Length: 434
Image 1: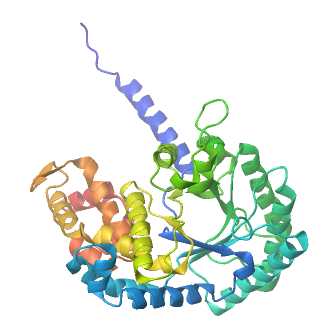
Image 2: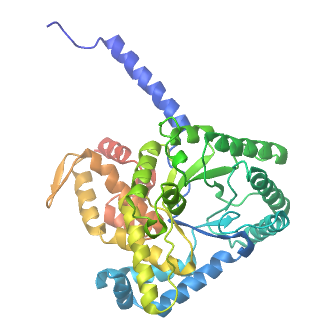
Image 3: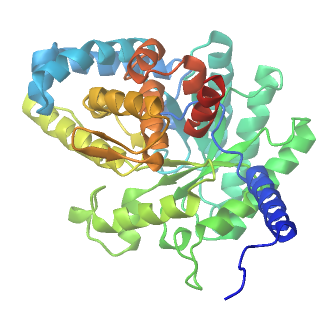
């Protein structure tokens, strides 16, 4: 056989083509959002929303925690976790519920709002917009907030877009033409790309008429139908749905109960751990990997109310669902009741803190060896693991399980290196110093 080495000019052409392709991908998929992903979305009917809703929900959540788990020992008993771990996370849960109990809130004009007359929905579209504007002025809103409109089905599309227009018009009038930080619109029960196109067009038109900056209005998709996972022709639907959003889509949320109902699963077996849900969520992960679009799991519909025994049972169920989501790479979910906030944070903090020491040893050792394959105990790490270990610390820091100071101390990285979010860049920088 002759020389099979690729000619230099051909190799250069290949590299140039890859560079151009990577630029196109980067333009379409800008990567991580500049603000942190919430660990949950709390939602409530629009008829109930007030500007101080987050503070009130936090007070109810803290009361439930103090009533049913007043210290680390009872927290360990409530959730069946290691007592030492419970002692570590308990003060962090109390701090979180006191300081920032709700990270993301959705004012609901859909299922949580119910079937109401047009007159009622008009009235609440205007009043909730006023409450959001008041919350902006008072600084009482969560870090992220938004509205969930009705589906853009033939039956409901006019009502849905009317609420969209009325709410936003009143909000901008009351707020001096400003939107809240991290404002998002939720589009539920998506069944076709045309619905995504319609909402995108509505956003563009509204921005034009209200003289907002382009792309000020962002939205997320609720994937609750089989058509939002697979299109009628058998192809995966999500890439086409995202493309129709023209850069406005920031997240995809899974709807457990509507989706399982659409699959013909009876009510007794409609829950977050059903294999049908895992299948749909795996499709979501594969379809949206590398896009920078956040993934969110669904909700647990058993509420922690009543006797301590009933509360503990509901807390453990909720925590097991949250844990399942985290293990499968879904770092956000939906909460329906303020008493679910203690179990949300208990599950999230326990998940990250119980593996923190081992992750710290592995990451420090891996960085010190300049990303050569290493063996720490009985765990083998190669180059692909580095970013995963870094992500572990980023997620732990993001959710409040650990502070930035603790992340620096335990990871062996600087704060700038952590914030850079790239293990490859960390190694390049450190090699350059060597």
